[in-house]
Every structure is written in structure tokens, then in C-alpha cells.
Length: 390
Image 1 (tube, rainbow, N blue to C red):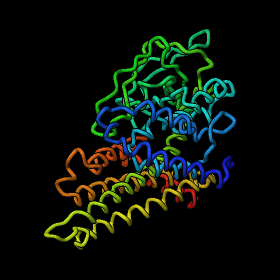
Image 2 (image 1 turned 60 degrees about the horizontal axis):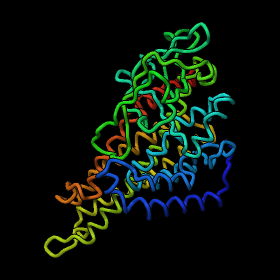
Image 3 (image 1 turned 135 degrees about the horizontal axis):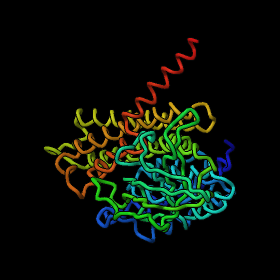
Image 4 (image 1 turned 180 degrees about the vertical axis):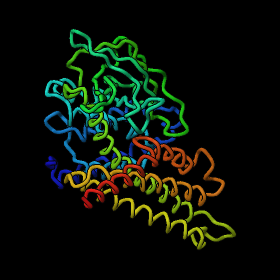
């Protein structure tokens, strides 16, 4: 994968993103949580600095960052409310990358510039009540008509940004899997297409301001040109490719959130006293802090290694799953330790680590649960060893 942005230029982009997050977003985290929405001025500022299309190639109006650069920004995004990243995450990630990697020239021309600018919000409509981390269980159906159109019927759940989206990258089964392929296609469905219904956004444990919704398709007609890649078997590969890339990104988010939890804990341990002694002087508190630092440093190194392997093409399957598994489990443990260090105050809603504790729990679920990552890793290792033995 050719690097479109030089290291020097990326340093400037990285610095601008860090300043934006620290000065514009961090001070308003409570407002975002309380209102369950990202303010319009923050959304506009994110558009202005190119965050809706930072991973979209430059020829389509994006910044053209590769995954190794993406994860450096993702660690910054993770430092604040995850609602910020969610706002533009689907454009750059699981939805946008389907178009970047599998879209026809006509599809790219129609959609990618709008996605890159943020004028179009794209959602990745894969998950269903009976088909989450494994797309093979899809029940949404697409039936080809005599004139070449497709009729889509089914339901999706937990679809990020659906309530705000203009485009649903929708996965549907066109036939049972057979020797010719998985029979799973991806379609580009404008949200205002007749028969599409987006439910009100969900009330979640955490990540307030990051909206997910159920989406229903009832006799939804789309033209043949809506079929991604013009191939009704391309959907499964498109989903798996986008998810693998997204897993490295989620791992990087986890590192950023873990770093914030540690920083909050260090501040608390330095200024809070018990019996006149700062609690940071207590050895058991220091042990928690040491474990947190160790996990973060290991996670950061793992994310960078997995991203480099993805960019080079060396490993786009096992390494992303390893990074996501380790880092999402790691941040859950660190968030728990952060609450413990804060004591009773860590359980109060106005405390940053309480929000982090709730927000990061989702990271172990979406874009493939920890259980799915273990299956990918273990199964991949066994298959590789079997090939060696042949």
C-alpha cells in the first residue's frame, strides 16, 4: 500500500488533531455525555480539518492516511469521549473502506468525495439479531428482478450512525452458500430509499453521543448499479476485509482510552491523601499503576506492529485479531483499576474514569467479539501449521 502522506506532513496532521481533541473536545466531554450528542460546532470543526475522510485516498478528496498513520490518530481519539471517533469512524473505516477497496469506478465517483468531506455519512449495515460477528448467518435477503434491480428485505441492529446516515452499505444474502461462493452481497442503499426505516437511536450503557439504531428493509428496490463490485459474492470478502482493518483501529482506540484512564489515576493518586499521605505513595496503588503502564506500553507496541504488518500485506488476518483481543481486554482491566484507585469517587457519574469504564466495555463486543478473535487466531495458527506439514 503506497504511502500518500509523508512523515513530515503527517506530523503536522497529528499535532493538529491532538490540539483539536485537547482544546475543543476534552473540555466538553460532560456536555456530550449529558446531551447524548456531539455538538454541531465540534462536528463542523472535525469536517473542516478533514477527519471525516482522513483514511479516504486523496484522489477522492480524503487525506489518504494509511493504517500505520490511522492508528496514531486513533490513539488520540481514544483519549477523549469515544463519541467523537464514532461520528466519523464509519466513513473512514468499515463503511468507507468497502467502497475504497471494492467499489466500481462509478460507485466511487458517486459517493467517495461526499464521504471524505463529511457531507455524506455512511453506515455499515451488517449486524443482525442472529448474525453479529459471523456474517455467514445473515438473514437479510436480496432478490434479483428481471430488469436487473434488486429487492432487499430484512432487519439490522446496532448500526452505527444509521440515524444520521445518507448511505447504508448493506449486506444481504442472495442465495445459500455453495461451491461458487458465500452468496453474500453488499449494496449501496441511500437511507431515503422507499422501504428503509431507521429506528430511533438506542439507549446504551456507555458511549453517549455515539448513536446506533435498528434498520429495517421492506421491499427496498435498488438498481443493479448498487451492487458493490458488480459481484454478488463480493460482500463477504468486503466485510471481512473492512473488519480486519477496523480491528487494528479499535485496538488503537483502546490504547488511547487506557492512557487517559492512567493519566486520570496518576493525577488522583498524587493529590488525594489518606491520613495525610498521598495515596500514590502506597505500594499497592503503585502496583496498580505499574500494571496499567505495562499494559499500555505493550498494547501500543502491538498496535503499531499489527498496523505495519497490515500496510505491508504481511498479515491482514491474525495480527489484527491479536491486537484487538489484547488491547480491548487490556483497556477493560485498566479501566477497572482506575475506578479502584479512585475509590468511591470513581463510581460517581461526574468522574472521568466512571465514563471510561462504561465506554470501553463495548470495545470487546463490536467489530468481532473477543471470543471471535480467539477463534480467528487459533484457527489461523492451526491452518498455517497444517500447511507446513503437507
